[in-house]
Image (cartoon, rainbow, N blue to C red):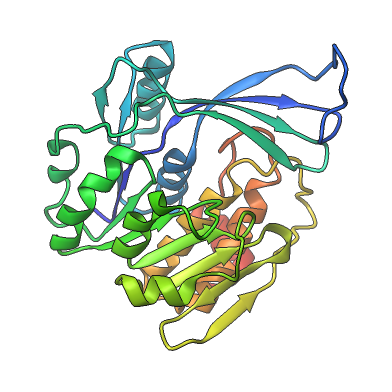
Length: 295
């Protein structure tokens, strides 16, 4: 298996609103409200699957209609999915999306802090595994020692980490590739601290329309501009970061240099912004190759 993704599937309800922030009023009329299987781990797993990586996914879900929908989706995709059921239910989010594609996510993580699950959930996937992507679910941190000992590389996405919250540090310091958004940072990208305290080979910071930057342990950084696809105007930024991560991993696992991987990933992220909803139209390997000029 090329990629095993641990944690991060749920149901997204998308509400397309007239603008953000919302006006303070009793009623706002909106377009039809839709729901999708989504969240970060799902986006990375589905994005990698569409890019040709042999991928499997595992997570904690509920014995509820949302969990049944997730299982049915993976059966239809033909993408191996393994789950532990917990009585707190399946994660959900309500994402408000403005006409320019910006979003505000109201996240219902549901699972209790300190949740522990049977480690067989991830240990059964370690033999012959090339790479593991670990979402920042609290239960998933307990897989990190096993993954570090296994003969595979590891990545994680810290999302909108502020650079200080200790919750994220286990993930940041165990991963070979550390992705994060700059949206909530209260300081410069803490790449030097991540390199000093962990095993990271790369830190990749994304900044939406401002592009992304790849940091290396020797103190170098390489900025890559965001991509505009003329035939796919931005309508919804849900899932763009996950598409970026999936494409970066697909390139990096094929020995593409980090700067080129970031350029390719930027195309995948821009492509995801061109469709409404969450992970409804992630780019394929053929389309990405044609758009990037790289096989």
